[in-house]
Length: 112
Length: 114
Image (cartoon, rainbow over all chains, first blue to last red; front, side, top):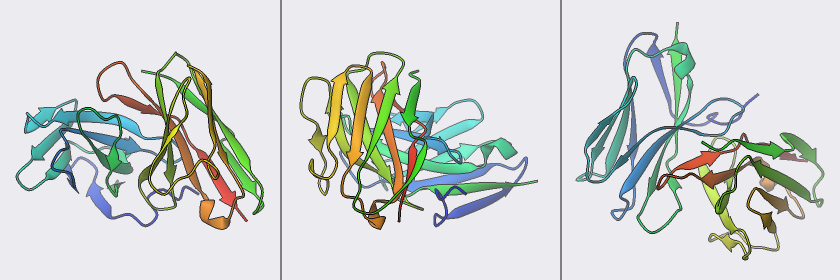
């Protein structure tokens, strides 16, 4: 079986409910943030990004909120579906570099 | 977006041996990255590989252990040398996209060292 997410924090959500996944980032110089979704047996897949000059960005069924004061990032998924079950990672990056620092990840389990 | 494939998708290897992982991209890309994802953990950058230059390794990773080749703009290899069980991980390659800060990942290679 897939070992990604085996020891990660788990968020269990009822199908149809909204999910909120949180992430604390470490580098005050980071000015670019991304949320990735990793399904079993696959590489991370880009979901949504946000730059530090914004505090909110919306996509399809997803919203990312950025609070630079407390260095906190969240991903909100509306009307969570079984296909949303995966491990979610936040990543931070800084202008002038192409390296990302990945957060620890959260496993989202959608309950039918 | 770029389509990235990796070979092998998984392997079980004996300690002390080496494994070379291949990463193929369907378009020419300047920067490629190799990550390690240990069981139950997040992704850690091993090195950045640009075509025509030596790979740049992150702290804690050395060329003797993880030699990288980047012969052209669509291909790279990562070798895990003299393997030990602690090298059991998923190894992922990724590439920069066209937009700033875009990065796409391959499906990963699951390595188990016994």
